[in-house]
Image (cartoon, rainbow, N blue to C red):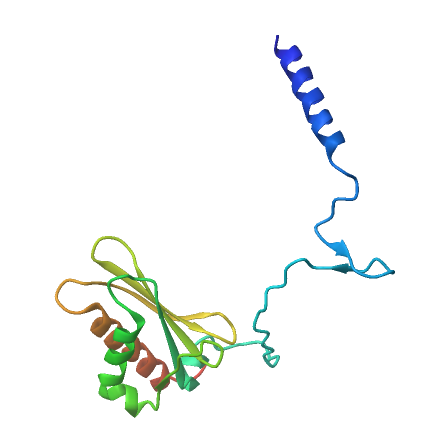
Length: 167
């Protein structure tokens, strides 16, 4: 019975395949040269970044970065709130930092994710190397998440700028 079922399934598959035209393509020929033309074209931003030398200091972005793009996947804590809390801190202006809404021009991307229950995780990523240059986990209990993220991230930036490269 088992071999009979397999034989019938194979015969049915073969019958279905024989019904498909051999010329069915995902792209249709456009001209006499049969050059395929896509049926749908999706416009995308194309950005070229200059090739940089290999990074020997992963914290270089924290030392020299000036522009920060904030991204939040949390429904409860939006990126705008984190941006506001960053700008309210004195360290932000002392360090000469700025917020950008263009992720392609940012030196650092600061991401915030809701983890479990009252836990949140933030990660700072160097946009040139995709290295994680700062991160932390915090609780929403006892204060605002955005305020805690701003305080801890800026503390990590200040610590990186206070140390010499390669230490």
